[in-house]
Each structure stands twice: as C-alpha cells, then as structure tokens.
Length: 141
Image 1: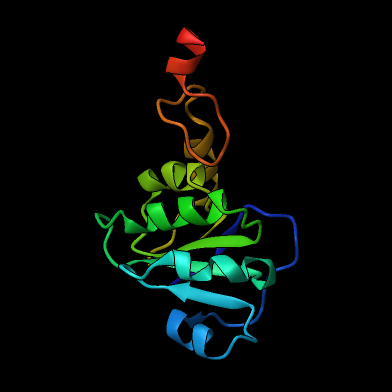
Image 2: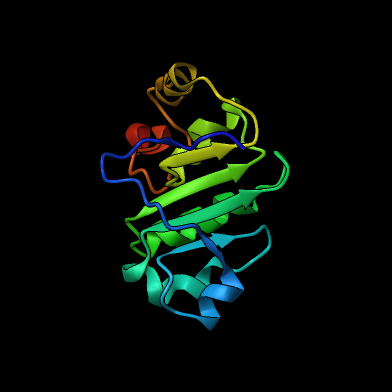
C-alpha cells in the first residue's frame, strides 16, 4: 500500500485503524477499518467519536464499500472516510461521490490525474452523498 491521498484540510489521523470487531470490544479507539462484507451500520452510534473510518476494497469489482460509505455519510459521519486496497483511478470519482475523501490504494495513483478524474464531468446521473443535483432532476424539477 502507498501513502494515503487526502482531499481534506484537517490534520492527518495518526492512530492505526482497528478492526470492526476490536473496535466494538474496546470502545476507546478513534479509527476503525471495515472489511468487505462487514456491516457499517454497527458504527452508527459511535460516529461522533471516530476520526477515521477506513473501508477495504479487496478487489476492484467489489462494490460493497460504496454502500458502506453512503450509509455512513447519510448517517452524518463527517470524519475522514478512506478507501483502501484495490482502488483504481477510474473508480475514484464514484468513490468521491459516495463520500470518500481519502484514498490508500495498493498501487500508486497520480494525484493530478485523480483530481482531474474527479472533476471531469459536470453533470451526474444519480444522487449520492456529495449533494450534486442529478441531471434528471435538473431536467424535470
């Protein structure tokens, strides 16, 4: 894994993320890691204490992390939401739309290319946690 790319202005969270099970057993951690298939809703009552939630993407085709991110952002989580693992450049804009604001890919991603990919399209088709208005709503009110 390479260094995380953060799209946030706050301080970097230095504490390592603990597993979801470890976090639920010892509630003093401020960073947690969700593996593919784990239920992000188990964290909902702890969101105000967490500074970092890292969501693992074991393979690029596993989309469960998108759902976890959306659940957490819709529940009001405002801390760092980091996608880690098999994160590819062409996925980053979708991940960003679901609420991810940091990326720790297994293979390096060029930051300039990533920022260009995120801002490439002015209009979007679906609503997500980034609050951009979908094109269908712009057309049909």
